Amino acid sequence: DGGITQSPKYLFRKEGQNVTLSCEQNLNHDAMYWYRQDPGQGLRLIYYSHIVNDFQKGDIAEGYSVSREKKESFPLTVTSAQKNPTAFYLCASSTGQGAADTQYFGPGTRLTVL
Amino acid sequence: SQQGEEDPQALSIQEGENATMNCSYKTSINNLQWYRQNSGRGLVHLILIRSNEREKHSGRLRVTLDTSKKSSSLLITASRAADTASYFCATGDDYKLSFGAGTTVTVRA
Image (cartoon, rainbow over all chains, first blue to last red; front, side, top):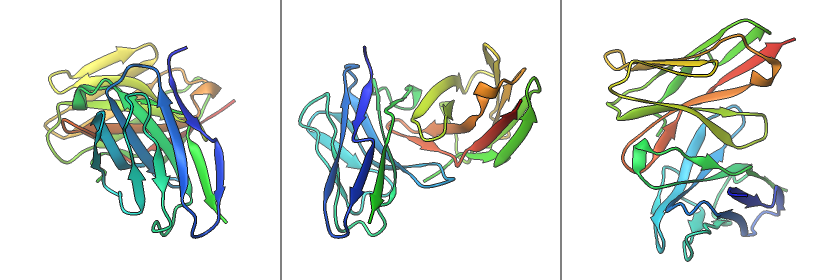
């Protein structure tokens, strides 16, 4: 089955810890994206990557880091510098044609800071 | 930055009724997309309308686009309980999309 997967589904973090959220796709898509969603709100872009070994900051990149070493994988690290990390995190991918492009989303990871 | 803004924020309708929600945006667009999100899940793409199109249909969905007013509407006809979800419009530049805060639709049986 082709698709985009995220793991884990739920993640609990103690304050001061870094955690890494996994995102994998087998759609052969060039572009991948990370969004954050807070309750009752829309999606805010954290980072995006249109090609392997290259990525760009989105609107709320502070306190987050990413890597894109493989086309299939785009892990997101939530660092201790992120002041309010409790949120629902969504990963997406697309063929990379830009605004004409449909994005395919994973099921999300819900991160809670204890 | 969120360019699209949906209206209303929430909508409750009876099964079988139609649901209409609107999206306004601020700058010129190449296209506008609508997505659905079931509670606690990822988003699913519904429909894309290009700037040179005025109306588009997909099953029970009808989308209109008025570039002079910088607005779009999504109509769901003959709603079903399974249509209960949040609906988002998205616009973007060449590299990324911006999503509005969404309209939460509840379909009552």
